[in-house]
Amino acid sequence: MDIEALVRTRRALHAVAELVMAGPQFRTSGTIRLRASLGGFATRAEPNVQVVGADLVASGQRLFLERTTCAGLAAEIGVAVGAPAGLYESGSGVGPEDVIEADPQQAHRIAQGFAVGDAALRRMFPGADPVIWPEHFDIGVTVAAVNYGVSPGDDHRAEPYAYVGPHVQQEGVYWNAPFGAAATVRELGGVDGVLSFFEQGRRLLA
Image (tube, rainbow, N blue to C red):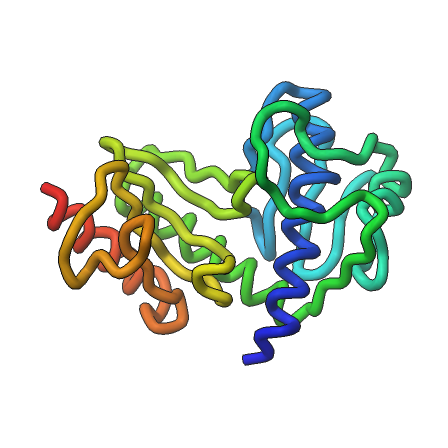
């Protein structure tokens, strides 16, 4: 696995999610929530913007996320670039004029993580509506004061991982992360493995 390319791609996709999708959606439609979609992720309301692999798709255009900027992408599709103002402090850490670049193979890996997370969460909690949040760029739900989800990677683990994060700190072998428990999607092996990981956490918390 090319960790450097994965981190670079995650940074690019996170920036687009925050500055080109969630920010414009919030200013237009009042929500920052994004969703998993075929091959990537998308807005939930106007403007209709989607990332498919390493491409941005909107307004009848398909733009490559290759040596570009969020400001340039936003101008191409006719939205005002920028994160949602006043809602959270941390984020992608990428500015509108910072150069971003996404590798198609690593973008696919991240998209697969979101798809696996979305499917496992819907099986775990029928009727749930998993959300991709632009602040941390993860997909998850919160049930009974416990966060369940999949992150595309961060400072804790570089590659996509599933997590269970109870709001009250726990002790034990399963709880192997500062925020609760984590295991990579790769080692869990897909939807069934992620679902089992979630179910184990729920049983331990019962």
